[in-house]
Each structure stands twice: as structure tokens, then as C-alpha cells.
Image 1 (cartoon, each protein chain N blue to C red):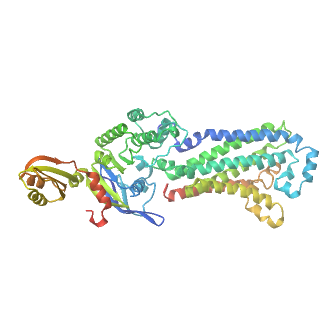
Image 2: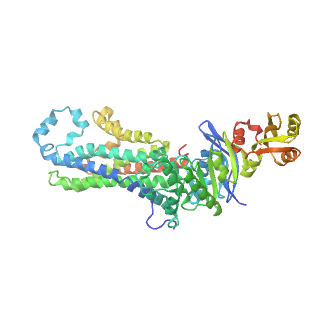
Amino acid sequence: MRHPAGTTLPLFRRAFFDSWRSTLAWAAGLAAAAFLYLPLYPSIGGSDQMQEMINALPAEMTRALNYDQIASGPGYAQATLFGLIGFLLMSIATVAWGAAAVGGDEESGQLELTLAHGVRRVQVVLERALALLLRVLVLTALAFVIVSLLNGPSQLDIDPANLFGTVVLFAGLGLLTGTSALFVGAATGRRTYGLAAGAAVAVLGYVFNAVGRQSPDVEWLLKVSPYHWAYGNSPMVNGADWASAGWLWGISAALVALAAVALEQRDVGA
Amino acid sequence: MDIAVSAHSLTKRFGRREVLHGVDFEVQAGSVFGVIGPNGAGKTTTMRCLLDIIRPNGGEVRVLGQDPRAGGPDLRRRIGYLPGELFLEGRVTGRKLLSHYEAVSGPVPPGRINELAQRLDLDLDRHTRKLSKGNKQKLGLVQAFMHQPELLVLDEPTSGLDPLIQQEFHAMLREARRNGQTVFLSSHVLSEIQQTADTVAILRDGRIIAVESVTGLRESAVRHLRFTTSHTAAPDAVALLTAVPGIGNIEVLESNGGVTLSAVLEGAIQPLLHALGRLELTDLVLEEPDLEESVLKMYAMPRKEVR
């Protein structure tokens, strides 16, 4: 009623469209990584020579890199793209977006002016989280499309249903790091703290997974590794664990809600 | 008349540091209310409380009849706000930024944005982060004025503006006042408040130490006086002058031939004129009141003595 036509969700639109360059750059990076790694499968993962080389590596190392499953097409795509380079790119992108959404905006002094206008703080957090979600979905959809395209030509032999499950987990993992950064940024008003929190979730998740797989004594580390929740049962090979996906997405949603509550409670720019 | 903005015993602490220790004021609807005070006096904090950007620890604030927090977005749509430090870093043009704020706080009458930009000589098609400080400030002003809000809250509105644009801004304030809009503005330059405001509040160390109409401030302000008289001896002239209420700092500048005296007057002029009427004057200078001087005096005065 108050809004002229075409201006629903103004904060979301601004957050999403003003950062299209960044979204495009990350998408290009992810696409480049996929096009670099996946076509190499027939000559690397599938070859006997490569398998011998991997067998010669210390078992701890192959486990840490998830290379124990590299011999099959789905395992190769899982270990190289979703488990390593794609995970890295997605994590960096979401942490940067999440930390900038509220904490970065406040630190640069611009949130004050936005909040002085006809918006609710909860609305600011929700619309910006929505922009984060949409950007994650763009990257995820892109990964899904590229892997599907390369599935045949690169002899990956991936089950599309398993691929779908994996990208849902991939997106969930990205959302969790991004919303962690969003929440801490919104609670503290500091971009750096948001970056640190998001990076901690991504890096510690990865490290806990790598270390936790080494011995039953440290297996408990796997329980607190979001990375392991997502990829622990090799979703590309065995299909997604939907309960894990539920946790990743659910905790992300909860972090957004907490971010909204935190921002609602405190002074801005003080 | 209605009260557009009021604060009663407004206190605000940041951690252990209390920056507002019970601020009280009332702003008449349709008037221009200026707050002046040295840096760190609490001007920006007070304004942020009006916009619900920060929340007071105590006291009561009413903006257009509502508590800022309870009023929410609907209340803030009726306010135009210019922050004291304006940061615009996005890779967007001024025009796009304004249409974003229009979508949030609008509606804006058609043509209004262009008209304001033209008046302030602002190019709306440049990226905001490439704008100079003064041009960012202009964009901030357009953003605050464009939806013709009932209340304008402007924190140091002319900082960075060149004198010509400052005049245009003063014209915009006069128009706003004519339209019945209320203006709450801060400055650390008195002359600006003096030119634009009806009422001035002096804020020091988180307290309002005086609220005066600008006319009242002028009356109570210090005036410098100098006159030359013939046919009267210097001691007699000094004695006559000393009897005038509010006179101080009497100095005899010259006493051979004509007698020239200087003094300062704080208070009403009539008694002085009465006294001077008994003298044969050959020269008289009564300067414009120096508001700056009287305000600086209030800044420096121990707390209890002010008013």
C-alpha cells in the first residue's frame, strides 16, 4: 500500500542486486574449478597408475584429503569439487557475504541511515539473509548444472539423485558458515568478528573431519564437524543423509533468527 | 501549540560511561529547534535516541507523540534523518540510492528528487563512493527532505557544504518551517543556529544547560559599548555608567578633551539609554550582541550558575 509497484522487499533487492558482481565472480570461479577438475577424472581417478600412487601415500593423508574414495566417478567429484575446491570457494564467499550483511554494514556506518528509515531491524536481517540464501542457491544450482553436463563426457557415472542430495548438503554447509558470520556480525556490529566466526566454522569443520577420521580415539571430533555432517557418508556415492541436511539448514535458519533477535536488542553504531 | 519532540530525564550509558545525564527539552511543532554544544556533549547520541538507533537507559522520549521504539517503521517514515557522519560507499548512483530509500520510506512526490538535487547542485548519476564529502552531504540532505517528513532531524547539516549551498539549505529550512514541518538540528557553530532556529538548546557534558529563544539569547547576550562625551569629566561619566544594571568592564580610553569610555552590557538596553541621555554624546557605538561570547561563557560556567 505504501510501496509503489515493484518495490517489495527493497532491502533484499538492494542486497542481492547491488552485489551481483561479487556473485558473478564467485560463480565464475566455481565454474572454472569444476571445468578444470572433473574432465581430469578419466586420467586421474579412474587410472590404475593413479590408484597405485594413492595406495603408496600414507593412509592418514588419503583419509584427510578424502582421497580414499577417489577411484570412483562420484567419489572423485565428491572429494575434489564438493569436498575441497568448491567447499573452499563457497565458504569464502558465504563468510564474506554473511559478515558484510549486518556487521560490515554497521561498521562502515551505513546501517545507521538504513535503520533511520521505515524498516524493522528484524526485516533488515531477514531480507539480507534471504539475499545470502539466494546467492548460495545460485552457486549451488550452477554446480549442479555443470556436474550434470560433465557427467557423461567425463565418464563420472554419477546418479542424478545423489548429485541432487549432495548439492543440498553443499548449500547447507555454505549457509551454515554464512549464517554463522551473519549472526556474529549482527550480534557484535563488527565485520571482523563475523569473518572469524564463519571461517572458524568452515576451517574447524574441515580439520575436525580430517583428524577425526584418523583414529577411533578422536572420532568424537566428527560429531562436531559440520563438514562431516554433510559429507561423512559420501553422499555422491551413497545418497544424502537427509537428517544431516535438515540439521545444516535448520541450524542456519536458527542462526538467522538469533541474528535478528541480537540486532533488535542492542544499540547500533554506538 | 503541540509538542513535536520531547525528552524528560533522558539518560544514556555506554558501558560504564554515562554520556547523557538527564536531558530535558521540548520542541514545539512547526518550529526550528537548534542544539549547540562542544564536541562530545551528546548531540549525536540524543538524536540517535529519537530515531531508535540507540536506546536510552532511562527517561522518556516522545517523537510525534510516540515512543520511538514502539513507533517503529511507521513513525520513522514521518521523520527525515541526516546522520552526523554520512558514509555512502556502495557502487550505486545517487539516484538509485534515493529510489531505494524511497521504496523504504516513501512515497516521494514526482520530480521532488530532481528539484532538490538541482537546488543543491548535486549530480545524481555519479557513484556515491566517488562523491566528495560535500556532495555526499547533499545526497544526505535530499534523502532527508525528499519525502517531506513531519520532522527533520539533522545532525550537523551544513558540514562540508560551501557557503552558497549553505544559503540554499537555509532557504530549504525556512520552507520546511512554512510548510509546518518541525526541524531538530545540531551544530557546533552558533551563527548557523542563530540564522535558522527559533529556539536554541545548549548541551554540555550530557546535560541541557540552557534553552532560550534566539531572540531571548540575543537580549541576554553581551554587547560591546563605546561612546565619547564632551562636557563631562571621566570620573563622573564612569559613576553614571556604573549605576546602569548589567554594565561591566568599564574602561576609560581617552580623557583629554572628550572622554571616551568602553564597557560591556549584559541585559536590557533601556536603562543604558536612559543614563546616556543625560550626557552630551559626540559618538556612540553599541555593537551587535555577541552570542558566541555568551554561549562560550555558558560552556565554561560551573554547572549551578547557568540559569
